[in-house]
Image 1 (cartoon, rainbow, N blue to C red):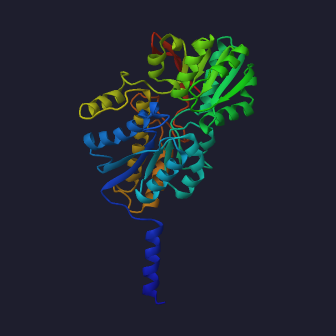
Image 2 (cartoon, one colour; image 1 turned 60 degrees about the vertical axis):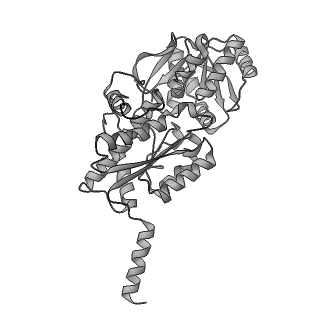
Length: 390
């Protein structure tokens, strides 16, 4: 084989290994539960997708390059989420991916590292947050475990002694509870864990489980669940005489749907707050209102704010990578993805328009700040100031 043929074959192999990308567009993928059991909190996916549309309409894209943002429906089905991930990596040439569930993030964490594609997930599982083992995986706030400890510390400070944990029978529910129980942190606080109750993620009646909870006479019940399950828990708690003031949930329980649907059965329910609410008097909300003047905002809630923030994080990493390349989109996709990962990790005191305090991503979380919120007169109100959830 002569040198010319060998050179041609080598060039072809290099193209296969690291495909070129269009010089005038930036591809990102966003998937969530657009339809399915967790659709009540899908404002996150819309928020991220809308932020890139906002950039295209008002800022000329990122660093002068238009963003092609693909919004896909994983339907909270693991096999569907895994297929979407492969499509985003192999077919769409996405330089940054915004994924959804805890199950998918855990299943993909090693694959993401092997593929070398920046990935920010809607999960807060500590089991995917490791800058050394999973250098391409990012989240956007305190882990579920950190949130749980914030809630339990607040309960302890208010005089609680006995704790019950409730969680769904999926990775999102079971994983964080298992981590916290094994850590011994509950006992270190001086609290007694009197029961841990697992329930079917899609259960529509939890009366029997809540009667069991009541029999344990807990001072606080922490629920590792999303909004649809919390609705069932608080509804059935009222049936058996457990007041909502005993319950604390994570940030996926700050949904206006809960007080709207439950009324008095939600009064005093507490949850972990990480993001400013939709409508807050902050600079990011002014951006959203500019976007809303020309476009529909599908979900006007705190989860939309989370998605808008994640869009800002992704865009900042992409923009800094382009700057590092002399203001041009790198032609080598693998190298571009690697640069975006590096620049996202290097983000320090990133201003996200007041949605959270400024973010630093050296720990791949951005922020570990949280505060409590409770339902009062049908609305969530903040209780206390931001504290470090670690």
